[in-house]
Image 1 (cartoon, rainbow, N blue to C red):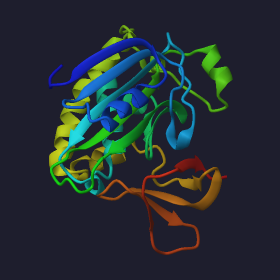
Image 2: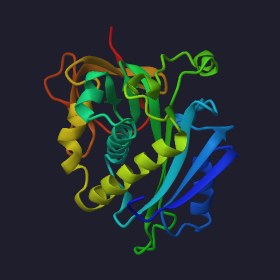
Image 3: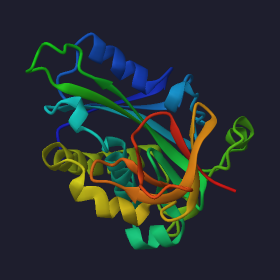
Image 4: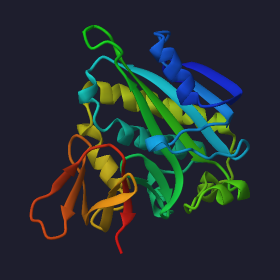
Length: 266
């Protein structure tokens, strides 16, 4: 590890995010801490969805990280975390990022990793500030990351979404141990989050454009399962918000994080 972070590894828990959220609510967090579970019995996805992961074929961990900035200045955090995950994947597999991109690895706004449009993993961010009246209190963000390391029939049967696995990119046959991938991603997160905390999202914008799965393509935007907008994806702005050229409209629509998903519009 290249930065100060407490590491925890457990065989089983309901949710690593819930574990760290409980410590945040009880004000137990002091230093950054990452918690890895071999098996989550109630893994969490965005918008209250369940995250399915097989114990021997997936990576599931969370990181509690403090910021001194107000939460409203942390726009783009999930995008930065996605970039850090890709950096960790690059180190784990011994492949440069250009090669990974050519083999289909990409990021789907705001929090998914894809391989050739099939879901590889996702990021869930929770937390905040417990007391709005205490100006000196740090903002704790709980960053949950889940990824498929190898293919699993049980996982394929549990979800209707097309899925992928990190093993598809493992051209050099590197060890696919969860611990090694976890540490590589954490090292990258340490660097990326430190820069994000001081400079915001602006330094990452062009890098995220490189990994954007749907830039300049027709998409639909949905909320709570209902399609709200359709148009052409125009990347992101300097805050990490999604830019959509709605069909029939001249101006770009700015969309911020929330229960928003992207799908190809047909």
